[in-house]
Image 1: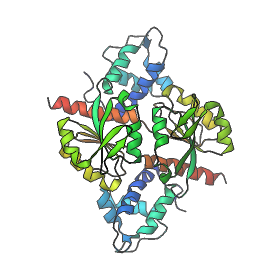
Image 2 (image 1 turned 135 degrees about the vertical axis):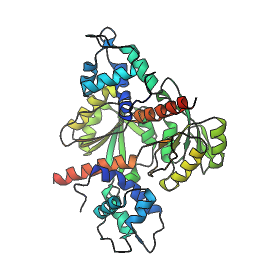
Image 3 (image 1 turned 135 degrees about the horizontal axis):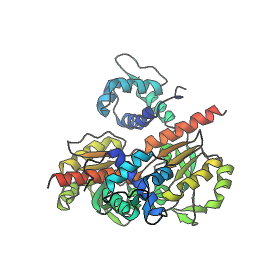
Image 4 (image 1 turned 180 degrees about the horizontal axis):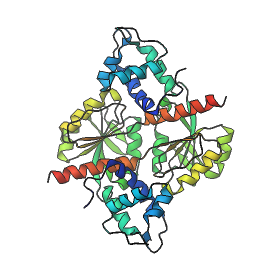
Amino acid sequence: MKIQGISTQTLRRLPYYLNYLVNCEADGGYISAAAVASALKLNEVQVRKDLATVCQVRGVPKKGFPVSDLIEGLRDCLGQNNVHDAILVGAGNLGRALLSYKGFEQYGLNIIAAFDIKEGEADGKKIFPLEKLPDIINRLSIKIAVITVPGDVAQQVCDILTSNGILAVWNFAPAHLTVPDGVLVQNENMASSLAVLSNHLKSRMEGSE
Amino acid sequence: MKIQGISTQTLRRLPYYLNYLVNCEADGGYISAAAVASALKLNEVQVRKDLATVCQVRGVPKKGFPVSDLIEGLRDCLGQNNVHDAILVGAGNLGRALLSYKGFEQYGLNIIAAFDIKEGEADGKKIFPLEKLPDIINRLSIKIAVITVPGDVAQQVCDILTSNGILAVWNFAPAHLTVPDGVLVQNENMASSLAVLSNHLKSRMEGSE
């Protein structure tokens, strides 16, 4: 496997390649890095390097890479051939929206349990009280957690998660999390994205007055 | 207003400040940049600069900034005092999850209509056929659109949106979008984030074998 040491920047581009390749009509089953780069408006040298990293098979001069091998290599790198069980903490509005989203499994994430201070049910899934976190994480050997709690309790929740063996945190709370070495936090901040959009709109509207 | 020319990096930090200030217990109604920086693990000089940008009132030596003015200034910069109507295109799993999310309004976004190739209903909201996009965008003067269609049709949808006056696009499709000058695209790629998490897990698991 070549995927050890693959950069985060490269990883973030892979879903774009995969989406394109699954939908493209490849000529004779091969596609060139130039064609992919042009379709996705990316730099050709970069695309060639990225594809060579994920593809087990070498590109053929004047033909390119075999599309089926590329797709297989991309799925493998993206963890899509290998579904990870995960838990979600915080069953408020955003947590519930994510629980109802049927698309995570295709990306290799299977949310098997949700936790909140309030017990209940969401989208047919039982919501467990926070006290059960350590037990369930350990018993099911869960390594990925999604945090959708309010920002002011996110660090506290994160500490419980990491002290029980969680190695990867997908953080939707508007809070900077401190984690032990070896744990990765991937931040997703909807409010920040909306702020950027809203500010752009404001300046455009004021500019046009 | 000082918010013209505020940088995207600063904007993305503002929700963190707001979240902290709304939940903190301020001493006598004032808070110092140092206290905020320490709580959020950010650089103090940067925090002081950010807060001065959003706050209409000057900080007082040895006391800091008035918390209520900071909160007001932050809400204003973030567009939260000014709800924007928006539309959503693509009522698949992700689109439906976002439609069901009740939290956008607090961030200044009100999704008033959804569109898809298939008409229907989601979360009590009617889903309109794509042909109605131009009419509704124009009639209601919509400027923000959320794209949750599959990657291979995202550019096509985006072209319809921008040619009808959309100025800000929140793109959840795994596709690079090309837009006219003056239109802003904010990309959100769940698959990319999951790829980063999954890869980290893989390398940790292989390393520990």
